[in-house]
Amino acid sequence: MMTDILIVATNNEAKFREILQIAEVYGILARMPAVKTDVQEGVVSYEENALLKASSATAQSGVDALGEDSGIEIAALGGFPGVISARFVEGSDQDRNNALLERMKTIEPARRLAVFKACVVISLVNGGHLTGYGELRGRITEVPEGGNGFGYDPIFIPDGFDRTLGLLDVEEKNRISHRRKAIESAVRQYRDYKNTVKKQG
Ligand code: IMP
Image (cartoon, rainbow, N blue to C red; front, side, top):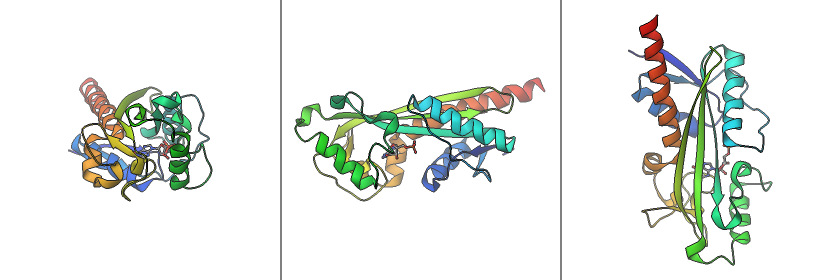
């Protein structure tokens, strides 16, 4: 029975649909919030930003809420751009892809390793929270390829694949993505928490 409701602290439709699909598998109904979900993101960690988004939505709505934060870390650039992936250069996703490729132009193929990281936090009305993490390892191409997905998808080839995420369809990407792993981990913990609360009540 689908009784547990979780609101999702995002304005991003694509992220929301992915979270909705996974939550449904665990008997949880995800909703878009009727609250403001833009928060001033920090530069410290994905966890901090995900918790900020989730707890702001819980405070405004009075319901358990899910927040997500993610980024890409490039080994040869010391983990840059990481938590500032969405905003290290003003402009479009394409501008940021070009800026990264420019910074990496002298880096040989074997050293173009990168990892996408995601953190999902579910904040609870009782004041606690649950945290899930996910990673997707791969490498950065020399030129962008493919128009699917968003962000750095056209310049990232996941391990075990020979094409960029920009050339994979959304279902293929969502089976392996960092976000999927983080959502699944947090939502599983949430289902277990709800079951425990129900048994006690
Ligand atoms: P956030 O919305 O503040 O978490 O920003 C995350 C940023 O990291 C996005 O704007 C993208 O630039 C990048 N990013 C995170 N996940 C992905 C992904 O699955 N594909 C491509 N880029 C991503």
